Image (cartoon, rainbow, N blue to C red; front, side, top):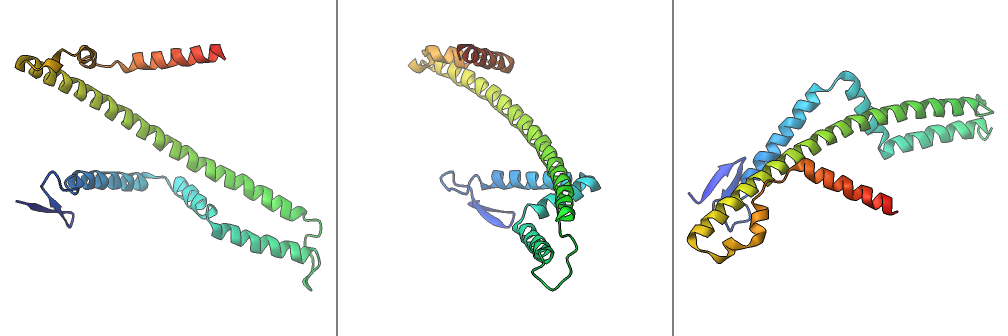
Length: 188
C-alpha cells in the first residue's frame, strides 16, 4: 500500500517522503492534546478562576478598560467635567489600585506556580526519555560494534567505541557538573 489514511490525511509509506514521520508526530500530538484536556478537567475551581483572571488581565483589553476608567476618574476628580468630584485627593483611587495590584499579583503567582509545577513534570519526563534514549543508544552501539567486529570491519577497533559502549551514570554526570561549577566559583 503506497498511502495510508490516518487522522483524515494521507501519508506516504516511502522513506524519502517528508510526510513519512507524520503518523508518529500526529500520534504524539494527539496524546499531548488528550493529556492537556485531562489536566484541564482535573483543575480545581480556584485554579480555573485564577487562570481566567490571569488570562484576562494579561491582555490589552484590560489595559484599555483601565485607561478609560482611571482616565475618567482623574478627569472627573480634577474638576474638568460638570460631574461632581467624588475623590478630589485621589486616596480612594490609590487604595483601589493598590488592592487590585495585590489581588492581580496573587493570581499571577498562582498561575506561575502551577505552570512551574507543569514545567518541572515535563523536565522530569524529558530527563527520563533522554536517559532511556541514552541507554538504548548504548545498547545499539554495543550491538553494531560486536557485529562489525565479527565481520572484520576495521572501525570496530576504534578506541572511542569502548567508551561509547558503557552506560552513562547520570548521578556521576551531575557530580562532575557540580564539581566543575564549584571549581569555576572558587576561581572567581
